[in-house]
Length: 336
Length: 276
Image 1 (cartoon, chains in turn orange, brown):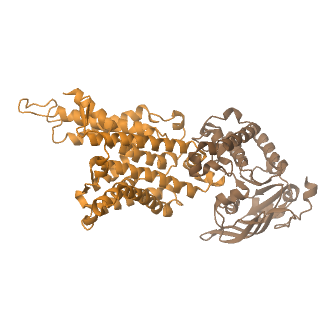
Image 2: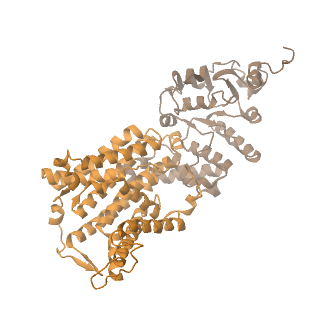
């Protein structure tokens, strides 16, 4: 077992550009669910819109990248309006149903054969990251952090991504301590009470949906910049539920929650994954793996990792139900 | 106080020369059930008016219709010269009519002081973009906070200032809800069963608080089942039964009103069923 490799790789995964993407998507969801109480089960849809609003114009129509980023913003707002206008006047359950359906529609559209000319279909789109590569100041062969090699492009994405995370998280924190954020929290607690005090809750919910959706789209953008490929299967509902796991781990309605939540989540998954990979590996010199093959072998460990990681995360939540940054007192009140 | 009130005729729909709220032909049906069907009612300004009636009389539905939480099928209501029917709830509140709820709605996972601050109207920081820039709303926030602290003192909640509202007792939540409604600085306060589930000691102080609202120039309309309380603090009483207003008057008028007795006890309550 190469523990330095396992640990350095797991730690890197927890702070990589991929982690930045998860942090952003989860932060957006935190605005919806954590602060406003909006049950959005389609955050992956916002991420997909962010990813493809960048990759389609650049790959297919040679748009300059600032224009594509503007499209990311515009389309995420449009999606929020489309989801919000029919559902935000209704009970929160309806938003849940509509968001999960719309996110799936988006994914299936991106995956469809008929629109492959536009979306790239199942193969996805590549070659839209050149603008990011061109402004990369780091040498291409990158650096070695402990036992983990990081190429220049990924290092550049990591650095810029964390700047973005800092800006977004500070922005969310600043908004949530303002009277605007107070109204969002009051809607989460009891929207009729907020209405009775003269707050136009529809407008506030819509603003929340737009902001959280836009942040989620930024996350989707970072996800595909890191992969250098946008593919529909990355935006399945599993992505949304990973983000729920992340914000519950980190502490719901805490600006820092998605950051630490993502780090724990990705570290645990990656640690279990490569530990099992090492423990089931066979080489010509050493044909017996560390773990017995009747239990797990190198063909099925990748399924096992989610089972093991699931147990680990469940244990964390049992030990600390309010999440890392949550307030234990808040757990005492069953609001819904 | 009943001397000046006797100026109003104790009949359903009686005119008041200083009505703050006038309701005409408000009707609301749920399928075949007509929940509210009020011909004409006027609520006098700067008085405490009680809305009473047996269970299912339509009192809470009437409240919801007035405050924008429900929309009438037909009819008009005018508050201070503004039409209320068809207005959204938050606009009714901004016009100066604020309600509380039968089941108290404390914002559990927010502190008491945050509950209070939320109530203040016209907050600059409630705009998304100004909210980002704290210096734009800090000054107003400080004023709101001192106003809130004063109200908390008045309602004996100062010691709970930084507790989560979910940790308050039932009676304290009633107090908080009333205090929070006052943060809006309403002209008219609508209290839906303010005494429900409150212990007798706290009841007395709640009564004083409600009287205090009138004394500082506000109008109070409240739904209540506790007749002792209704008798003690109301200047005027409106009685509903089966969706309609069946009687109006002072406490003495109402106590002697045959329609009211019939509504509460049934029209045949003193005839002997055996005789037929």
